[in-house]
Length: 350
Image: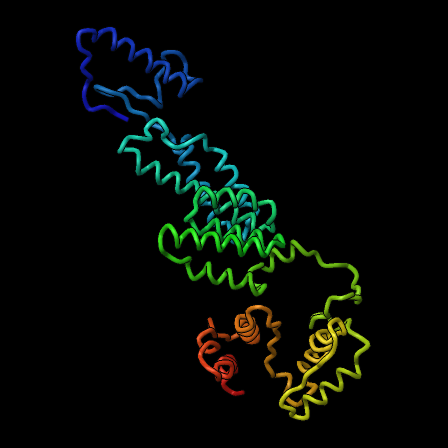
């Protein structure tokens, strides 16, 4: 920085001026340790009535940090590994708080706030990159600390819910949402954003869309051998090629469906294989046209559970590519709500 006028030293001007020169000399030595003694300085330059600091942006940690964050932001979506590495190196540049010696001076307050916010964004971006890399349980403790330090900031809550859910801790993910919602209501009198509420619903319904395919591929490497034995677990539609032993029952169900029956129910004790017959036997056969025109049918699969309308909405939305954003209004309307919801997802030509 450059002063505009010579300072007034009072009666002891000569002694104070010499002291200033000593400090300037020491500062130059610190800024340019390899400069020859009494050589011309290229950083702390003498000007009339003052001094000027001239620096390369690459030599200022704050500028290097900002440049690194900008680069990581560009590379985050396609190169999460590189973005995480860049952000870790950028955050390592920090030593304490920015402009700490001027924390209570008005001229520095705006810049301090800007740099602190950018630092927090960088931390959140690095965690986002790590989530994209497939990390989950490794991030939980850090995210819980971040949520505690910033109780009204939504970003860390979203990331914590994702990390907990992907680590197999669904109940804790839902409790994190409820704590955040309660805190917002009690302290600010507001509700979480629609996006965060939607994430809660997706976690409740185990929506596969909240685990990106890239993460799923990393977390679940393709097995080299297929074991058709499922034990007490039901076969799914993807297991149709390995499903066997129920051909007669599948054929009987298909026959009942083709007879235009209003309702076909498969009844039996728990664990007898009803779900497997439907998911891995009947549905794949209907998709292949076992009944005239059935290859064009839409299929909605659901388990009612504690939230039957939410499960039904999710099942209907999954059944078609051109689904609306929501069916809640139709389902909660009246006795014909389910019919209206179904009609909304059916193509016009069906």
